[in-house]
Amino acid sequence: MGRRRHPGNPPCLTRRRLLALAAASPALTTPLLSRAADLIGHGAMVNAVAVSPDGTRVLTGSWDYSAILWDLASGSQIASFHEHAAGVTSVAFLPDGTRALTGSRDAAIILWDLESGRSLRRFEGHTGTVAGLAVAPDGRSFASAGWDFAIRVWDPESGVSLRVLEGHGANVNAVAYTPDGGRLVSAGYDFQIRVWDAATGREKAVLEGHEGSVNGLALSPDGRLAATASSDETVRLWDLEAGTLLRTLYGHSGFVTSVAVAPDGRMLLSGGGGDRRVRLWDAASGRQLASFRGHEKPVLAVAFTPDGQGALSAGYDAVVRHWDLMGKADAERP
Image 1 (cartoon, rainbow, N blue to C red):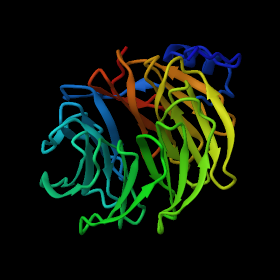
Image 2: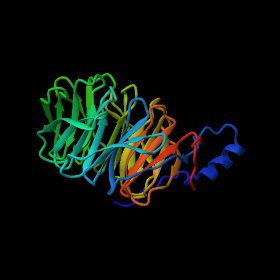
Image 3: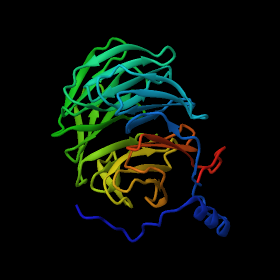
Image 4: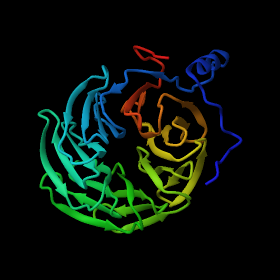
């Protein structure tokens, strides 16, 4: 697919440039981006990143078959987990913050006790890579997106598969619950976003418009909007109530792998696989606030911290970058 351009795209904004703009214009409210402590320890590309509900820890999954739990403030490792037989492709915390899930290319999902480092339960049923995980807000169920065209819903306590959602015509890359737990949203290689009734598994809507695989998915805090990242080089915002496309965000050159919505819903992060950039957007207008670099290879996952003041990006270079969006990092690096 040819490269797309948009006349409104701003140039890459370095921290020095942002500081200069802020000095020249007191009304500028663009967050400043600086590097906090990077998380270094994986031996292969990092595919997934999640931040604990209290914002103090980070869980990452890697092609090196492991997941690592990190202290976010110091960047130090707390524990590592090694029971998958292939690369770890998805991670998610449970709401209590003491347990977490990992999904893998080995088609299995493991529930971990983060305090002891012990595996509690193994979930098997997918016949392909588990590319995405989402935990219901009440913690009583979770969903997994599989490269077997299916979404499975599980009981984390019993290990029972509650239902299988089928409708995608290709591998499913991502899944998310709405904040009220009433709906599931999924996205995949069939270019589509599907909305499901979480209780019954009934399909409620299909959102179409992307011209490439939908690789990443995130929902707004009020559950009304979905943000998607695609191989068609765009990020798109959707109205889940109306089932309509709100806006398309242009700026990445190359496929877009991942997207995250800030806890207050005002900003978006996206990760570029082709351009190796992390881009920050205003959710209301679709305006690009900044693009910043730091990864030497494709960016594969992005996340906000729960307070919205920090961000994480993980990539093919096996590094997890911790960004201070407010420009208050303890130790800045060039």
